Length: 359
Image (cartoon, rainbow, N blue to C red; front, top):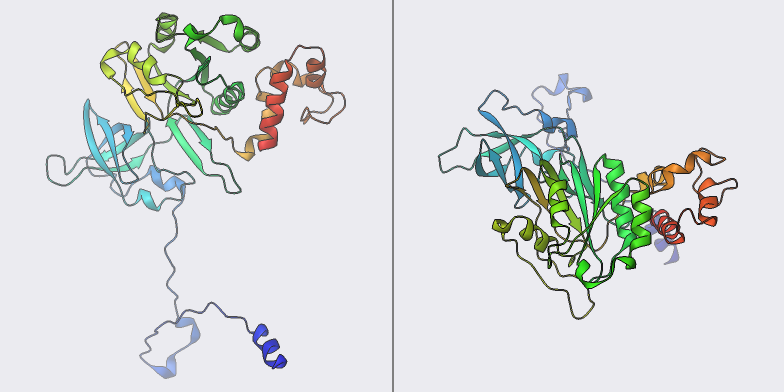
């Protein structure tokens, strides 16, 4: 009995596939005549830029909203078309959660325009930049928020929900990696005194980051915010409940975005925007309105760059003894020395350590 169990454990099932092979003349058959069919494989990302339909009636457009993995809305020559996403694009080896995003420039096949068949997105043009966040866990998935934009308006509220400077730091790091201009926008300033956040904002402003204090309730700072948006494609992003939709409605009353309340249970915001949309401003440029988020994960590959691009560190890291200093355990670290001398606030350094630990 024990011998049978031992023999059973030794058996290893092989992954065999049965194939039918037709042989006309058995005497002339050689093993090399067998050609195994290859299973379908994902195509390289570069294949998304060139379609086999390049000779058909392709028109350039811009994605203004993604409805699902199969459909989106595209503005083509001033006309908004609901388009299907071509089956070829779904075979591309994308590493993102969605194939396309708001702000993407695409080529649309308009051959079927006016018929019952839906027009189709055939090509996604190369992106100049992309703002994305990454899921947590062992296998990080990229969630693209928008592409081909000029700046990101990091929207926070001074309270209800409380301001989260660690989240702002993560946005600033991601904006630096993407080559985007970040603007820190603090809403609900009618609920607290400026002194509550004065030290933190002074640190950001001293290192070249623009901040705007606003109140959608009283109108404070709205002119300054509008001036920063004119002629730019700007993504509004931040925690849920910070008042993004209320701010946008005040800037452009005709948009009429749905607004929500802060939960009485955990004093955090509740989602009102459910998809990212590209909307033109009447005063020039575009708004990219995105759903509120609770976390903003960075990719692990950014870990080598964070010590240099973390807000305020660019003024000090060049003085570190080691060129690859992590500012955590090394001797001769200029950043740690700046923290000791209060040139870098302790809260900002702890935020940096939190980000590095998460990566």
